[in-house]
Image 1 (tube, rainbow, N blue to C red):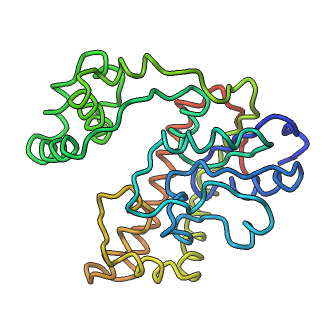
Image 2 (cartoon, rainbow, N blue to C red):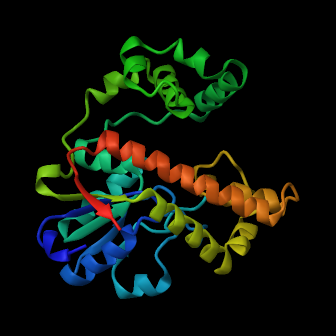
Image 3 (tube, helix red, strand yellow):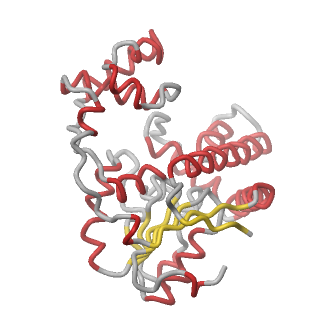
Length: 288
């Protein structure tokens, strides 16, 4: 990939699937243009993970300025809205914003509706309803505009929409229609999405997880075992649930590694599908 084809002046956005080489490209651009590297990955914000989320190493952090990495406690609420508010003041300097979380980039380049926070008691009510009636029960109670707009097959999205309606009396679609202008527009940015060859990417995923294990991923997970709560967003780190299951004696280490590697491949597939659907106006960079 030739760096001279990438703008030296515009903010650079780099999206792509896990293990696709985003961070390495960000480091090159930071060195070339004296840019701040800003995290756009939903899991790399958590302080309790470095190895398992492939957060930049201490050496990389010393070599180039980084922001929004590892600054959130594992039990601290953190949303796309939190991220967007923290990104805003960083845009005053040259940046390269990098990550695999498409919702963050959507909020950055399309704007984000300021939906009020959902009270804990309503979230608990929604959890209970999901247990007894499932996604279909909540979906049946949504307003028509929201029901047609969300991914109806995604239980997390359905529950979120139900919670907003229950808490505010207004459908999520109505809140979204009040979305303010974005912090960055695509036309004023260098928006890049990496599109790796699938076989090449799968091999990299396998190699990277093996390297994570060699670097101490199991010890990192062991440190997270006390107080582990699978419902926390921080618990979604790929490989975390599988290695926790091993530490609890529920599967062998080999089986846990195999399951985690498969989960990484499946996650990368979902990312690629999402990027194809939502980033058609981004510049596609084929790899390797």
